[in-house]
Image (tube, rainbow, N blue to C red; front, side, top):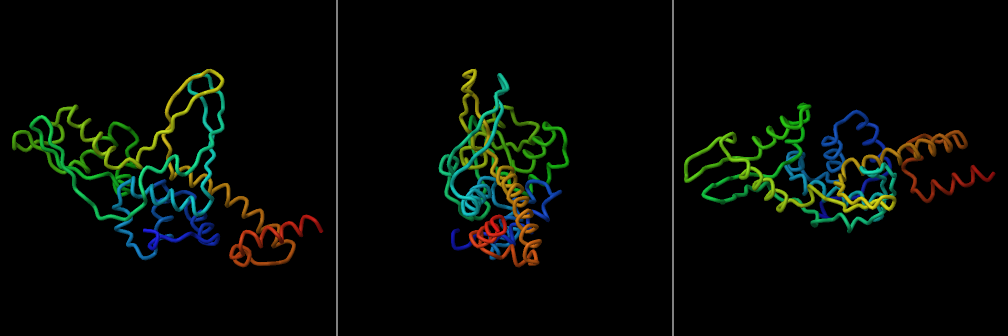
Length: 250
């Protein structure tokens, strides 16, 4: 995978940010990976499980901004605002790799169920459904490929809820990077709860903040030296900062 994926240049990252302004989360994720993995087909990227996709994005984020992660949260009990600081290793559940789509089976209490893991195409399919219950149902319909009880075929509606829960639990076990919990506690009131770490929204919020800083840098250097945006973006961050320091200190 490391031979397949490469880091993104400032120019590429800035163009992705500009393009992704009104794009859904799944589309941003695929665009980032498609740019970083030019040798991998779009079909393969969209069919990666959510955990496979997110493991690759986590590595790409580490290559882009480093291993330290910082976020904020509000305590659901008292409303206290918390600063969260952790490391990429704390939320890495699996090693990033590109694998072909697999089918899995679960046999339990004389039920036989065949399923696959959710992917970005599924996220696209459920994005238009505003009701969580409907989106959940559509996702299950797409991912549960076949089910039977004592060799008699069943529809999804005929599956008992405990069997559906067992399939979801098995998906979580097989694809742990798709659902990464963070144990969190409030120093003000002592309340403890779990946050779900979403690498796509986290990475994009960092890209958004970075892009606005870059815009200010481009404006400053362009006004000072008359350089074009492309010239400034293709500079190394160290070289760009040296020029900014000279503008500020002159």
